[in-house]
Image (cartoon, helix red, strand yellow):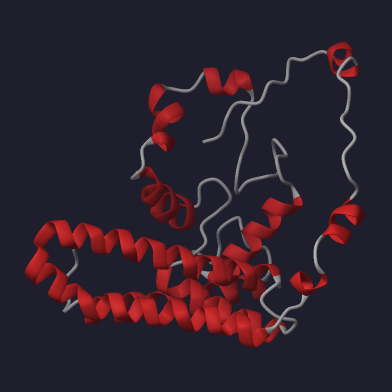
Length: 228
């Protein structure tokens, strides 16, 4: 859920607001050092490897943490795992945008390696995220991060208004509400959801979903077949 957007402002009121003088896109790019635009695949891959080493270290340490530190240690482990998971997501995010490298095949490969362990189907996410950037803040077309009008917001129940404020809601909103159920832009795991329009999209959905399933099974085995 997002902050309500006021749409009742009159055109006269809008015309009276002085538009600030902002730098152009070209001026902003000129102010950024040139080396920031260089896509070095070796540096990019090094970050992915570092994240994987941290992930492996956490899985190696979890039985000892649980044995000697109990629930307190396990909760701390969950927190650390969340940090590493976020790092993996950032790598996959850059793969999806093409800023990881100049090679599409490498971006796709490393994007799957980064996103599958956190159960984020890479190609479907790339598609929905691209639509979000294409229609950012559009009231109807920005499905990934939808905005609402003030009237719609006021008509919502207390749970609908404030559910996102609850910290644990982030887990529920990502999986299963967003990626599996598909609210609001379509399931990222079901090939025939409204997110996909072509056979190629549906095949990519299956491939990315299988990658997530493989990683989930590996984690299940590494955790000694323990669900919790």
